[in-house]
Image 1 (cartoon, one colour):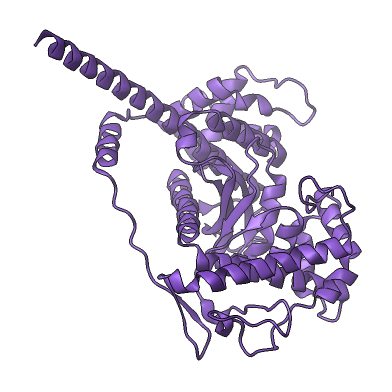
Image 2 (spheres, rainbow, N blue to C red):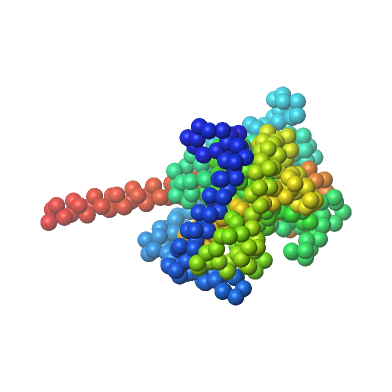
Length: 464
């Protein structure tokens, strides 16, 4: 199957009945496992009257003394680096600067393209204005910096440079200590803008005008893809879009999100495209669990599903709309329609439309399965929390990097605002990559020191 739904090793044709059976098996298996494990699940209590689950807070495992000592040793030895120096060194090592140039594709007619691109990346990534930067950087003018940024840097080329840094970071041994690249977390953070532009809206969530920098951050702490979206846009539609537009060698299969990612169409599309969407669940009162059939009842967790016979999946509808569902999934895979456009249509689509209703039913199946997994698996909940904490840390760090103009995005053109976010993500990734190199070198020094200490101890013991 082109969209990857067929199980490995299956020789029979994957058809509507296979798809239906696959979804039914997923739902029945997840519910049966949650029901059987409930008596031993000390972290979960289900209110028998309301059916609302209550998860007990878990205590994080304390940091081991050896880990604390290692952290202190690394902090004490971390060298001080300037942002300009980090940009220059990563440009020389990774050669991300070679991605940029004039739209014609010809060689840049600049005296020192490496130097100019390094300066532009520093200026734009920190959100400094070109005129302000020129007052502090000798040998360049504000006009030159502005011209190079506008003519030699595009959204497509910035995405390619970001992918170069992601790939270089993934090849470091130390990055594998933080994750294996199979998981990504998606979340947005508010960015201030001026009022007189097309994307600026007053955010209901933040209570001030601006836009949203929406990042997909790998479990290795580096950003795979970045969007800039209006405050009024439903963030969940961009969860899948960032995964599909990520061109790096790091291709995650599991995506975590905050409460924005709990929509039926998003769950459905993620499943159809082969992604495992597992958001962080906070408000259980607004969530509904769906039964595989009217006759299905459970011993311990039946209250989750509400009244018997209600909240039942319409598998007949899913089976009847199989070809339409597959056609939509293939269209998204081939780029005929963007996932964000599709999800916007599904969100506002008529509930009488059969394809919309089928997407909703598939989403109900997958979301119920994921909710049951979340309730039953305490280690999974900890992994989801850790992943969403990583993207929140990245958000804070990227805003600290973009200190210029008090963090306000000065451009009013939506394309330039998108470029500003990607410049910032590129600079943030460069710092993360450079820090990983510094940490790796410190760890090697500590290993050599401990090795020498061990050898001295061994020689002393031999003498005695």
